[in-house]
Amino acid sequence: MSEQAQTLTVVIPLRVKPRGGRKAMVTPGMLVLERQQDITLIKAVARAFRWRRMLETGQFATIKDLAAAENINLSYVSRVLRLTLLAPDIVEAILDGRQPEGMTLPALMNPLPTEWVRQ
Image 1: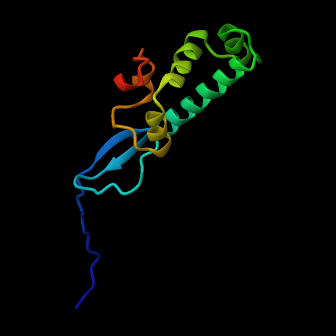
Image 2 (image 1 turned 90 degrees about the horizontal axis):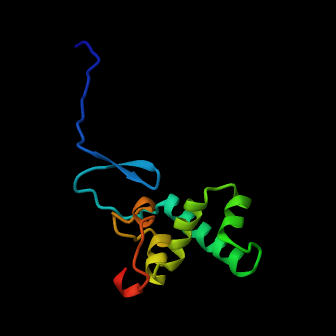
Image 3 (image 1 turned 30 degrees about the vertical axis):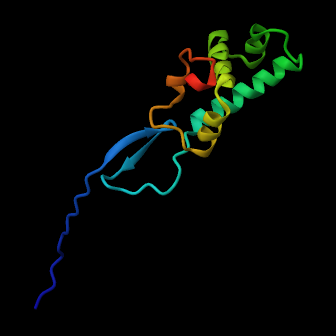
């Protein structure tokens, strides 16, 4: 009996989904046990609160001064600072990786209601 090399082909259907600036492969029916932290969104939230603290403590007098010091576009700084208006439960969900699937940084860069119950 001769032993010949045999090829076995396994086909696994999957989708590639963007997750926090990276792409993740997701198979149908896969039970997701781990949290899906969006690192890009987490960094933006942290940056927003750091910038707000810098403004509140008087380290920078205006958003324009802050943007110049950080070497970042003034418009971007203004939009990121809006993340400090998110309801505490939403911020917690983002940090824990429990945010809804469509809640991404580009989605949150648009104006949002300031009332927490409407968010």
